[in-house]
Length: 206
Image (cartoon, rainbow, N blue to C red):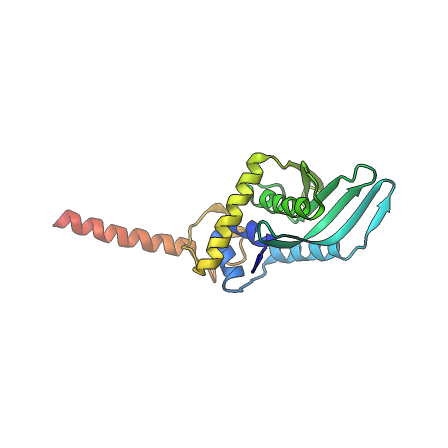
């Protein structure tokens, strides 16, 4: 498929469509303390070569793609079990496990690519969080797969439309490097309420 979507864009879209548009349409990127720590972690992960320990082989920085879904990306870590040939992608994250699905969607997209490339079935994968220093095992079930495919379609539409979605404030905004200077969701929300109140006042006085 022409113009494949970076797998990272799915994570950005699931976190916030506006953030996804800034990065993948406007080609903007702003580092803050959190993103800098994340970049440092991934540089460390991708710097290591393949290793073999007993029946487990680990490969880092593995390039993957999917023609079916139009995706491309790089795995932080791929574990290959000798004999069974079991493949386990592991995605490294700076913080701690999240309540939303943005990281799980990114991981599931990696699974979809591997399944297509290697003609295998993968039932689970893992997220490793630096803050808690342990893995979170993810079941790659029908629900997560469906959610991921929906996100792929929504992300592709966003990128094809080429428009920046309106700002919507949430508690997650403070973790975004665009919050404050580039994106001001609270100011946008106040402006909308201000305009709405003007029209409501006019209706009352008429």
